[in-house]
Image (cartoon, rainbow, N blue to C red; front, top):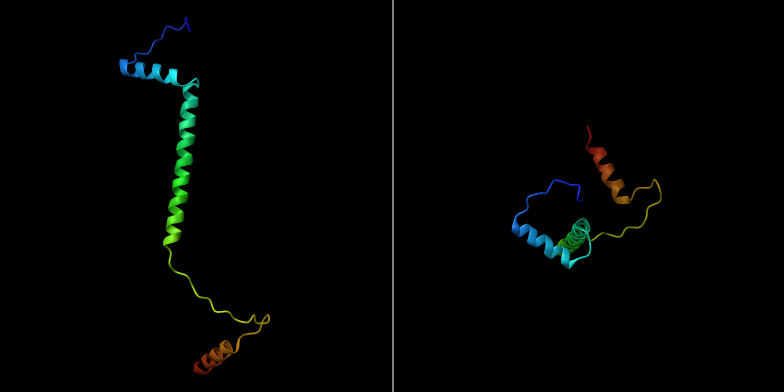
Length: 92
């Protein structure tokens, strides 16, 4: 580093913050940023799951399905046969 001639101009407030942050953690700055990002992403995912759970809880529609006997393959129910027969009669 002694061979480097470039020295960025940093304002006093930024320099103070940098020194404080170095004292708090032995991690390098990129590790700190990575950890902050990971924590944020976990929090966002958690919030999204909670939102989805709330939205599903608000759903009140619950269809009531009729239970029908399973018809044999290719066989129509009597009601369908009657409707189709009536439709055929109405054709010109």
